[in-house]
Every structure is written in C-alpha cells, then in structure tokens.
Length: 296
Image 1 (cartoon, rainbow, N blue to C red):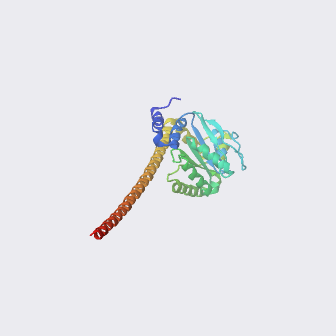
Image 2 (image 1 turned 90 degrees about the horizontal axis):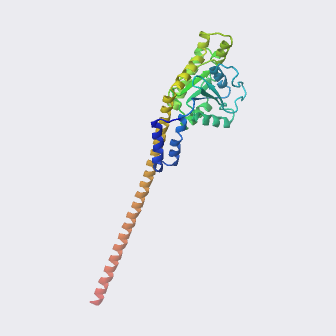
Image 3 (image 1 turned 45 degrees about the vertical axis):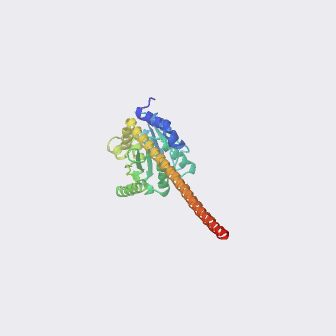
C-alpha cells in the first residue's frame, strides 16, 4: 500500500533524528507505518461470559459463527470478516479467565482500529479487574475515547429499564474518572436480535435490541478508515515525541546537575589550595623574619 506524505514524514523524522530520539522512540515511530495498512481491525474486550462472542455473532447475523457459552470457549483470539469494508472482527478470551488471556487481549487491542468494550448489565458497575485492565490499555497507548471505542452493555433483556439506566450512568462515571474521557455507551440484547432474525421479524424488535445501532457505529467508522487511522497514528507519534523530549530534558538536567557538582568541587578545591598557599606564605614570612632577627 502506498503511504501518504504525512506518514512518510514521520518515518523521515525517525530516520534523521534517531541519534537524538533514542532507540525506543525511533523503533516506535518506525512501527507506526504498518498500522495504516490492511483492512479495518475491530477487537472486543471484556470479562468471561460478558457476551463478547454472542455480540459479534449478532453483528455478523450468524448465530453460531463464534463459539459461545459460560465456560472459557474462546481460548485464543479468533478473526472473522464482516461488512462492506471486509473488516476483521477479533474475538478475544475473557480477561478474568487466565492471566495469559488478559495479556493476549491487551496485545491484540494495541494494534486495532476500534475497540468494543463489552460489559454485562448483570454484573452491575465495572469491576476492579476491568478498571485495572483499562489502565493497562491506556498505558499501552490504546485509544479509548468515544471516537475509537464503544462501551457495549450486554444482556439488556434481563434488566428493567430504570435499573439498566442506573448501571449505565455508573459505568460512564467510572470510565470518566479512570480514563479522563467520556465513553460512548450502548445497551444491547444479542439474544433478542438473533431471535427476531430467526423468526423473520423486522422493525421495532430488531431496533430495540441495539445491534443495528452498533452495526451503524462500526460501519460508519470503518468507511472513514483513512481519517480514523491518520488521527490515531498522529496521536501516537506526538505522544512518542513528547516522551522522547521529556527523556532528553531529564538527561540534560542530569548532565547540568553533574556539571554543577563538578564546578562546585573544582571551586572547593581552588579555595582549599588558595588557603594552603596562604598558610605556606605566612610560614615562609615568619621563617624569613626569624632569620633576619638572628642575622641582626
């Protein structure tokens, strides 16, 4: 794929200023180009039994495309193709199943265009494990703002409307407090959608399931993939350059402190040498006067 001028500019910066930027920053900037290539990539993240696989089955309108169940049915990330843009949907293991699953999910999320964070309304507010995982994603540079991430609250058919709205409000507050950005929340019922689809129903029941709104959100963003990726890559590049600048400033401050310490030591040595010289001169003068007196 031919890369746009702005992406080549980032690569040139990394190449020309590698000595100043350092190995880590240079490698990170050079690794941004592959993020621009390939079909749209959409990853789901969430706890075990949050309804991630069922959600993607609903988006695909294929009830049995991905394995579902209460057990750890998704042991590794599975990819399926969806939509007009042939987007890749990545179905990840539950974050709380095994430690390796959470690590695998975090690594998968880092390279994706869009994140679908899945949380079951049956669980109430976000759990500590989810919040800590969000911290890890943010630290890895995963974009979790409403432009790139949607928070899908599943199993909407199992909660009364008022209770569901209270849970959504709490989740939004937790998200903002933890990450400093406002999420895009959406309540869905994958089961209602798939049931209505199987029964050939259209209209209100399909719309009320929330799945068509999710499909529209995903399709709209994958249709504007170039703009989506440009914004994300530029942000990553700027974050990388700012980190490199902070590192350089820290190094310069350390060098300056070392230089000041050396200067202070040199000054102290000069003062000590001067004092020693004066003491020697006084001793010589005293001895000279003594000799004069004896000679007189």
